[in-house]
Length: 398
Image (cartoon, rainbow, N blue to C red; front, side, top):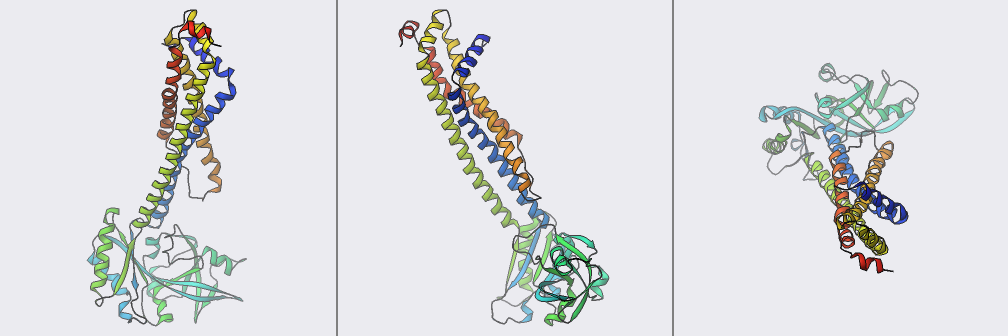
């Protein structure tokens, strides 16, 4: 049991050497802050990337034709027939959709802008998680009757109709006049693989034939029932497409799993780097504590001898110096943890809107325990040295 006198002596010694105590505490604080930050950054980044992928559809598989010739025959391209064949052939697929994008020019009054016109099939909104901001989406009647209606992205609507409500207004794309029925945005981005861009407008797929002359799909989307079915669906979709077209034709069939794997690897690499920095900093802080405590033992040799002469035991001396080291480590740990929590919270307003800071409270506890352990480990040698000093030799020390 550590006596109250030992506690008071340890506190008095730290107060007597404020600058040394502060510098030692600073090293431990930096190390503990790094430990908290590494877990916070890793966890928050992983949650953010996973959230983006899930917003697009974590079970999403997409396929596109890879031209191998300068002018491939139309039969090589993806078709509505391919789309209709997917669900009967692959039971693990719950939903399918397709699209065909063309770069054209839209005219609204006196304004003309280059746009990305996207013809979409039924089910495109659900599989791509489109959010309708105003108006409505394309319904079955629009698809079946080839209605000349369209939806604009939020950015395109603002550019075409900066001062007016776009709903009900008409625009011209090529030879066709469209009525605007809605404004939308994507819930998430497919990291460069998206056919939806900032200047996109959606129209029924059947109208694409007016621009290209035939019904062709550039991208087919298939949503697997479960995440574990994604590799199977990816493989079977590729086999199905190759079986429906001539030999040698290539189709790029991918899923978002590779992006998620890359995000995890980057997060892991960043975590390892920051963790190594934190451990190095804690080690340096521990060595600094040991050095300072060894110097302190030398400077306070007469004091130690005097305490032993009046009855202090070696165990009391050992506890006193261990307490000093542990108190420095614990104070540094608390300061570092507070900094490690404060930095992400202060940075939150400058992060993307859907990036939320996540703390792992277990990591905070671990950081505190590790820092206290550093104080014990690196404070033991000076404490043991002080405890073994002989009173007579210590009193003669100058």
